[in-house]
Image (tube, rainbow, N blue to C red):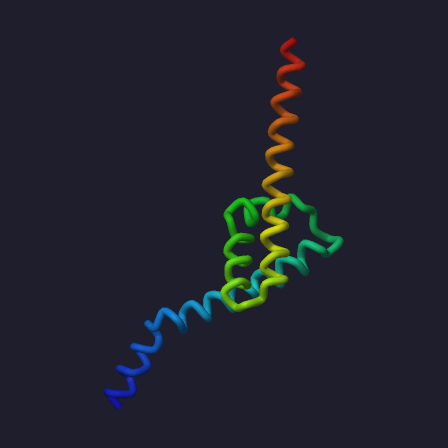
Length: 102
């Protein structure tokens, strides 16, 4: 019985097992994100903190580890689009301030 407990504790600490579990969790979070984001009831602002926290990159990496390259690319692409939109919005804000000052 003691040997069984030791085997269970060592398998729980196995990084490969943990990595698979973490990847599966991140993939599931990504699926929920897409379902919720595409729902008509939610605005894009609802997920601002989620996307700004770097979760899209984590989800993309999890898909990549699992060999799900198409899904990985979708999350990478969305992350890049958000970054591009954010930088454009910041530039627009700076341009507005400059024009107001003049």
